[in-house]
View (cartoon, rainbow, N blue to C red):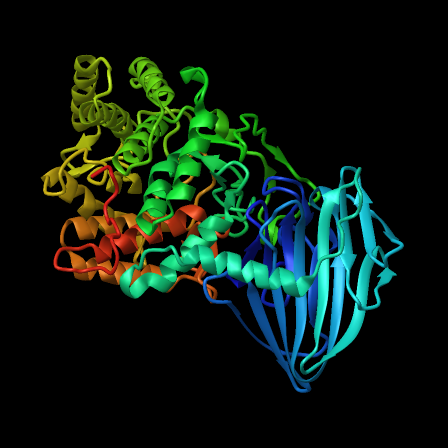
Length: 602
C-alpha cells in the first residue's frame, strides 16, 4: 500500500516530477514529461507497478526537510548502528533528465538496501534490462530507456534490480537514474556532486527574487518553489498537479487526472507570480495561455495539455487498484470538452491584469479578446457545467454568469485604460444585462444569499469570489448575506466545502474533502470585510495543514484528518501566496518590499 498523501515530498526538473515517501521510496514518476506514462506507479497500485526504494535494512527513526529554498530533499535515517542522510533531487533539465540519490554517511556504519522496480506504461510493461559496457544497468521498453549508474554492486532478482551495501560516516554513495529515448544512446554518466551544487545554486538563486511576505515568508517561498517545479519550462504551462487519480475521498470514484493546465487558474496564478516578483514566469504563463487558446473562439477549452494540446481523452487503467483502492484510475480528463462560461472571465481578467501590471500585450491579443467576447455574447445565456466541472448535466450556474459579466467588464476596462478600440456601447449593454440577470435569478431572497445555480437552494464556495471580481462591493448586504450563509452551511471544522456533495448535485457518489483554495478565499473575504483576526485565524488554520515539508494537496478530509486529492496542488499554493500577500498589505501594515496584495479584479 502507498504511503499517506501527506507523507510524500516532491522533487522535479521543471519538466517532470517525482514523489518520494518518508521511507525513501520513489512511488511516482512520469518520464519524460509530467503527462507521460509513469515508470513508477506504486502510488496508484502496488510496489510491483514500479518504485525505487533506498533505506536502511534495520528499523530507523526518520526525519526530513528540504534544503533551504530548494527542491533538494534530505531524509535522515537514524538506526542503532548510526545515521545516514538520503539526498534526492532532479537537476533542472538542460538536454538530459536524471533522478539523483546520494546516500551520505553521517555517523557509525549503516547497512542499506536498494530495490528498483521499473515498470513503464503505468506499471504494465516490464523492460528488458542489460548491463552496458561502461557498467550501467540499462532498461528499455518501446520508446523509453533509463540507465542506472552506481558504484554499488547490482543484482537482478525476480524482474527487479536490488543491492545491499553499507555506508560509513563521511562516505557518499551516488545512484543516478537517467532517462533517454530508446532510439538513441544511453544517458551519459553524471557527476553527482557537481549536479547537486548546480541544482542548489539554481533554486536558491531563483528564490532570492521572491518578495518578502512578512511572518509567512517561509511558507510563501516554499509554495512558490513548488509552483516553479510545476511549470513545464519549454512552454511556460503550469500543471494543476503532477499526479492523477489521488482521490477526493478515500475509496471513492472522485479521482481525476490533473497533469494539465487549466484556463481558470490563469488569473490567480498570474497574481501570485507577479505579487512575488517573478515577472518572467508570469509572462511565460501568459504567453502559454495566448498560444493555447488561439483559434476559433467557439473551440475554447477549459484546459489544455502542457504544450497546448487539445485532445485529452479520458480512459481508465484497469490493472491499477487505485490509491487505497480508490477506483478508477483515470488518464486524461473528459471535462476538457465541457462548456464552462467562467473561463471567458478568467481569460479577459488575465489579459487585463497583464496590461495593468506592465506585461506588454500584443495587438493580436486584443483581437483574440474581441473575438472571444463576440462569441460570449451569443452563448452566455446557455447553461454550462460550471467551475466544478459537474457531471450531472448543464445548469445556469451563478458564478459562471458572473464571470461572463467579468469578461465584458475587464474588456471595457482595458479599452478605457489603454486606448484600445472596441464596441464599448455593446459591451456596456451586455455587462449591465448580465449583472441584472445574475442579481435577479442567482440571488435567493429567502436565504438572503446568492445560490449555486438559478432556481437552486444549494450554496457554493465559488460565490465567495463575487466581491473579489468586483461584481458587488463587499459592503453590499447580498454579499454579507452570502458570506454568512456559507459560514453557516458550508464549513466543516473550519474548512470550506465547495458545495454539499450529496450525490445529486454533481452526478457523483456522495462525499469529498474540503477544497483548500475555497478556505483561502474565505480568509480573503474576511480581509475585505476588515475582519483581520478572523482572517489570521483562518490562515493559521490552513497553514497547519501543510505536511512536514510545507506541501498542500487539493483537499483536506476533516473527518479522517488527512490530505486528499492530487498532490501537491498548484491552486492550493497559489491561494496561499495570494492570501499571505493580501494580509501583509492590510491597512496600517508596512510590508517589507513592494508586494501588491490585491488581485487586479478588485
